[in-house]
Length: 367
Ligand code: GLA
Image (cartoon, rainbow, N blue to C red; front, side):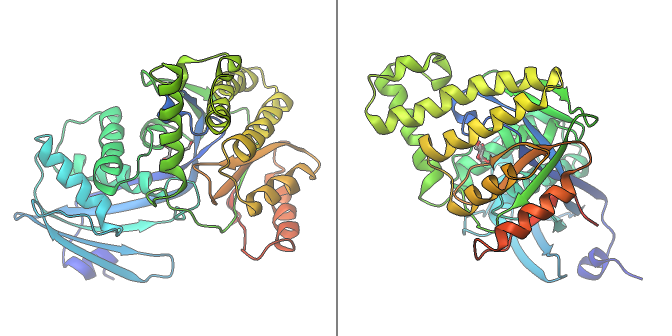
């Protein structure tokens, strides 16, 4: 029987690669402030099957979970953003040309299991998976860090989302049994083992979708941080470790900066807690992080707050918080070992009675 790729393109793919989504344990909105983050990977992946062509044509197809196909075609050298999923791939070939990285046209099939708008980096998973496919197909000498940096530039310069470097680094360098401690200022990394004998992880998608490239929230938070830096006379909020130094700022900037400054400190403490197997401490830090995002950074939504609230009512849960950029998306939580599925089911059941969206459990995978 022919595969979907063979049916579409009448030949076989030469590269078959994948990249997972990520979930950030703690360290939110710190990456574009030169700060610290602590993400890990989720089981849901984006797969790319690709075969190079001899001409400059790019033929893309995506298949969603129900097997529905969408297509997108363009010529290398004629990329222009159209506010569509194909922009990510167009952005890659556009940037490669600018950087003198040589690729020809290609046919590709993308299958994504990372939900979009859920705060789990579906776009970075797509970009990193695609970069891996192009690296393999055209024998490009790109390191994993270079891949992450190029993917971030595609979002910043082509798609118009001013995202930081966390997602691309997490996906390009992370693994499932570690959290990746990343210092976004110098891109140094440390893999911190996740102590599965002491904890379990759950991720629940609220069903409220967000988009980072929209005019609203994300980009404006970023500008507010820049303004705070300007007023404080520092290059990045990372340069401030003492929240008392923020007293001179107007209230809005003070709140935004306070989140970033205290969140950086929480990431450092979270690394220590993980290393010491102190889950109560880690849970408490996650709770503080959530409150800081809700009240100071103001990126939560009522549905997310309800999910966090319901998590904390569940025995065996150490902590839970909004994960990712916010304005919707998912929560991440930690609980007693091997309890995540049970706990997550209870949380979802109770949350369903409190709001209209349908929350879904993504981690642990229940099938
Ligand atoms: C999004 C961005 C990241 C990061 C988070 C918030 O996921 O892509 O760069 O800023 O939001 O921590």
